[in-house]
Structure formats: structure tokens, C-alpha cells
Amino acid sequence: MTDVSWAVEPGFVMPATENTPEHCRLRGVVNRAIRVEVRLPTEGWNGRIMFSTVGGGAGSIGDTTSLLDRGFAMASTDTGHEGQTMDFLIQPEAMVDYAYRGVHLATVFAKSVIERYYGNEISYSYLSGCSNGGRAALMEALRFPDDYDGIIAGAPAFQFAEFASWMIGGTSQQAKHPLNVESMEVLDTNSRRACDELDGVKDGVINDPRQCTQEILQLDQLVCATGQEENCLTPGQVETARYMYTDQTDSSGKVVSPGVLPGAEAAGDWEFWMLRNNLLGSESLIGGMASTLAALMRHEPGFDIENFDPNNDRAKLAPALAVTDVQSADLTEFQARGGKLLMYQGWNDYPLRPQRAIAYLEEAEGHHGGREKTADFLRLFMVPGMVHCAAGPGAWVADYVEPLVEWRENGQAPDRIEAKVGLKKFTMDPNAVSVPSKNDFTRPLCAYPALAQYDGSGDQRKSENFDCR
Image 1: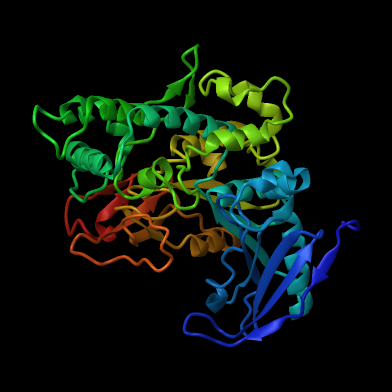
Image 2: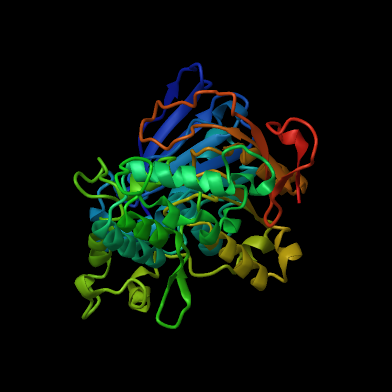
């Protein structure tokens, strides 16, 4: 590490507010580009750090305040570039920093600052992130297993090659027969009609959407009758919906991308990714994947994005995308030093479909001697009715920090985590809040493969009347 430079700004004492205690805020730059922010409670430090990794294209500092009142020191990094444009992808060093190195170097910096400020060693180091932040969390466990004692990885973006290819295929279908907000409402209503009560509970949430097959959905019944203009779909829109729900396969029949699972289609995720997005001007997020992939593949001889087959040409992407993608579920080194990994994943995540998280857990179980042994250090919590990382009609607001701390420090592995209803529709408005309603409820989130099941008596809105089994 002697060849890595640090530039440290003066720290400032930040006064207490309604939400945060008094603390010291310090900022610095590592390796001339990687911005880091560290916040340290002036009183009551609990000996722990929580590092927040950032989603999307990074380019900004993540959460450094939410756990200050619990006594955590907190830190985050922009990974080495600023802003949400993807220009950094064509800068080789910035790309590596985004992929994995930025979080590691920022971690080394933050730990040094914290230990020097308090004059004591850190007792336990934790990290949390979702989406790209979940991918970065797994990269820490795989590449730098000594950095953290416990990691929370939400909806990890495992493989950009899979993610981008699936979206390019979806863009083509959406261009031919576009879904809009109204048609997404029709699909949402249909999914709830068909599958809400498969678990015996009517709550507007599909408990295990894998059971909600296309045969049950009866998509063809949604086609507008003659003269009908509302609450129905065109034949082409049904075709697009079926494409989204269906697994993509290559020419040999192998599934190369799982389809979106039914439920919460109107909760904002489909809309945010498939329709015009203010972040990109006139283009949708899935529509921008072709140009992003072309930039990443610019040095690969003979690659032509115009002729790229998203089902059969994915092997061509491997060399260029190896730096970003989670390549392994072998977490032996992280496990050996006592590390604990808690993953969570929404069942109704549009961009990062949940089958990938389940497949990763199963792959890890293959490396580590089966389900029981793997559960000693890795557990996955599936969240019914949650879309990408947050929001949706389900009970998705949960504290993953305390269960992880209890697991790592006291050996109490979590079998269930209590959750409540939050924001019901994803929005880019940072001030959006959930509006309580008579349909609000609590549920246990269960360590996969267990699911929350109503025990047959008591209020169905209360978690206490559900078991994990």
C-alpha cells in the first residue's frame, strides 16, 4: 500500500440535529481520485465501522449518517469519479476503481482515520450496499476477505454481461410493442387477481411468485375486446409482457437470463427502467444498455453492437467484463476468518431478477459443503412484494444491521427478520414517504428457502401470526 497517496481535508465538528448526534466529518482523496467521507460520533463510539457502498454508476458518496446515533463510525466513497454519467467506463483506472479497488482503498483510509481519531482499534468492521453496492459488497468478500467482519449485500448486480444482454433484448421488444404506465397497471392487477391468495392470505403481495406461472396469469385474456380501450392490452403488449416474464434461452435451450417474476408491476420498477427516464433525457435505462456495452467492448476486435445477439453472443463479453462481474461463489477465505454475509433480494426486482440471487446461494452451497454448512456464514432473505432494493407493496422495511451484528459478534444466526410496509411505489423523489393505510402490515422475512406462512389464527396483518417454514 506504500504506493497509494492520501490527501486529507481538515475535519469539522458537525452539530447535533434532530436525526444525528454531534460528530466529526472528515473528507479525503485516495490515489488522487477516490473521494472518501468519514463521520465519527464525538461521544459513545461503539467500536464499529459501517461502510456504505453505492448503487448504480456510483459517482457520489453514500450513506454516512444513518447509524451515527447507534454509535457506529460511518464511511463511504464515490469509487473514483463524480456524477452519474457513464464516461468513467472508458477510463481504464477509473473502471478498475469502480469495479473493486475504490471501495478497498477507501476502506483502508477510513479505518486508519477512525483508529487514529479514537486512539483505539476497530472492534468490528461492517459493510452494506444494494444493487451495484451489493455487487461491490460481494467483491469485498471475494477479493479482500480481511476488510470486513460482516457484510450486507442487497440485490447484488452479479454479472453485467447478463444484466446488459437481458436489457438489450428487452429494449428490442419494447420498441416493437411498448408497455406504458397504464398497461403496467393492468399487469399488476392481473397478477394480484391470479396469485395474491396462493398462500392463503389476501394482502396484495405474491408470497412466492415462482408459483405464479403464465398458465395461471392467462395473459391472452387481457387482450382488448372489440371497442374496449381501457383496462386491457393490445396483442403486441401481451407479447411484450410475456417476453418480460419468460426466461431467455440460448440456441441450446440453456437459460441465460431468468424472466421477471409476476407481481408489483405498477410499483415503479418496470416504469423506471422501461420508460423514458429523466436521468437520460429521451432514453430509457434499458435503452441505454447498448451504448454502455459498446463502450465497454470498444477494445474487443470484431465486436459489433448492432449485430450482437443477446441470447447467444454473451461469451464474447467475458474478457472485457471480468473486472466488474462477480466471478465466484467460493467464499472460503471470508468464511475462514469468521465473516458473515447476509444477502437480501426483492422477489419483484425488475433489473436484477431474484433467480440470480438464489442461484448464487446454491452455487455457494456447492462450494461449502451443502446448505447447512453454508448457512453458518451466508444467509439469503427473500422479500415478497419488494422491487429493486426498496419500495413495493410488501413488507420490505427491515433492519439488517442488528441481526448481522448479533450473528457476527454473538453467534446468533438470523432465521427471521421483522419487516414492515414502507413506500409502496418506487420514486426518485428523495422526500417521498409512505402513507399509512388500513392495508399496512408486518411480516417476517425468512432465511431462504423458508417462506413466511400464516399459522391459521390471529390477525393476518401481524407478523407474530406467521411462521418461517
